[in-house]
Amino acid sequence: MFIGEYKHNLDEKGRLAVPSKFRSALNKSAVITRGLDKCLFVFTASEWDELARKIKELPMTQSNARAFSRLMFAGAVNVDLDNQGRILVPEYLRQYAGISKKAVVAGLFNRLEIWDEDKWEEYKGRTEAEGDDIAERLGELGI
Image (cartoon, rainbow, N blue to C red; front, side, top):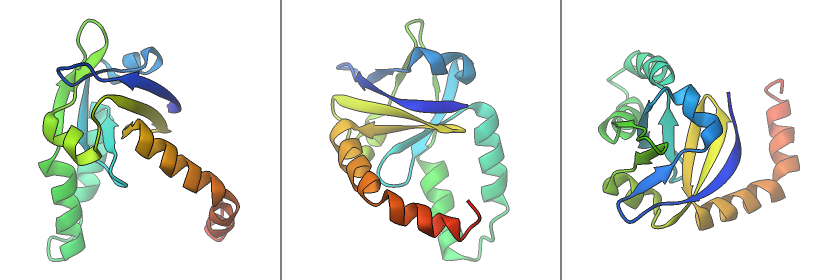
């Protein structure tokens, strides 16, 4: 399970250190893709396979299904952790998420998210300010 948030800098080549507590779960490789809210999603191979199976089952005739499939698959790339526990985040993904130097790696149970640090702080501030309202709406779902 991935939990917590960690701040890291990307180096000049676009490499990002994966927090040490997450490295063994990734088993030396991962899949990175465009995420929601302008962040990047990072999945283990098994989590990626599970998501891919679910997306594959979506009806191709629905435009939202096609759009989500394109968002997830067209931007996806397999990455390997180097000996120092870093992954190379491709330029097109860094550009999508607006990440230049400072990043936050957030653990969200079955995936990691990579955010530009400033965007993360802004998003987190908004979410924390709306926490009570969010909790109330989720209460309707049984949470």
